[in-house]
Structures are given as structure tokens and as C-alpha cells.
Length: 229
Image (cartoon, rainbow, N blue to C red):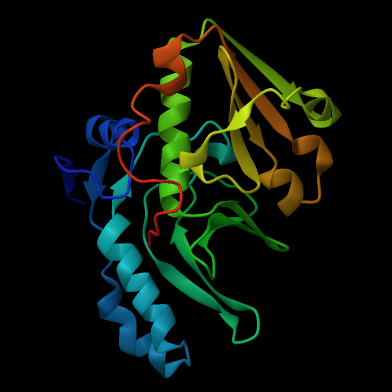
């Protein structure tokens, strides 16, 4: 397998996330979607679904990043595969194989969401870029926080978020980030929803952050509404 350094991160990311990808990411060989296009078309996968997979591969294919703090690290690297769905429900495709033996797959949803799929589909972030932004923010907050506190299960309901604002660049759905006066809070509910396991909810509170810790690198790059593959 060939490994390549990344000198120019994919578009649509904040400066923080671009720096994270360029410093900590590498590119590996991923199977081109076009090699299998006709095979999928012959099995009645719609052409527009294969087009979405090809666009995903062009933008993210082969990108290998450090492990996520949850979901046992996330996908090993991005590689489009295994489309599935119906005309009524929409179509998903695999975003990359698991790093470890988790009971779900990492998928890109009908509207481009990044999420997990087992008994049912749970979108974690509105785009793949949102997942990468969350990885970069985890790395950033872990470096600058004076204290990190973990909260699980029902105790997550007791977190006071009214005075905090959502962090837009992560485009959170089941997983969200919140910014306060001197802290960042990451809330993970994806596994709890996907596996019907409420006690699986987890929050990480990164406290004691200064202005750079709260915002560093977030002001440049894509807006939260920019469409990505």
C-alpha cells in the first residue's frame, strides 16, 4: 500500500481542520469507484448513487486520519463501497472500513450525512467535513484544555448548555459541540441511538480554555452551510 503525505487538504474545511489534515493525515491507495461502476449498475444501483460515490472518492478517498476518541476510532480511511438502499428510503454507501470490531458500519447517507448504520441509520454530522472538523476540534481542545471531564448516561441530561452556543463547523446531528465562556463540550449520542443503549451517551467537557483554545483556526474556511460530497 502506498502512503503519501498531504500538502493540500481537501477544500471545505476551516484552517484548524486543514492544518490537522495536513500535519496528521496521509493518503493511502483506495479503490477507484469507476472500476466497479458497471458492476453496480448491472445490480440496479442507480447511476446518481454511483456518481455520489465517485464524488466522495474524488474529494476524500484514501484519507487516513488519527483515530477518533469515540466509535473505536472511526473508519480506518475513507473509501466508498457497498451501496445499499431503496428508491423510497434513499441510498447509503460505506465511507470506509472500521478500525476495530464495532457492531456498525460507517456510512454516507442519502443527503451526504456522515453516520453509523446497524439496526438503523444514525447520522452523526451533516457532512463528512463535519466529522473531520470534529476530529480536528478534539485534537485542538485536548491540547489546550486545563481539565477534561467525562460524563456518561443520564448525567449528560444535567449539562447546562443554555449559556453555550453550538459550534457550527462540526455540523452536528447526533453528535454536537458547544462553546461556552471558557470551555468546549462534546456530546456523543450516536452509539446510544444506533444500538438502543441510552447509557452509551457520553459528553467530554474541555475546561480552562483561553480565546485561542475556544476558537483557534475556526474563523477561516468553509461556513457551516457549504455543501460537501
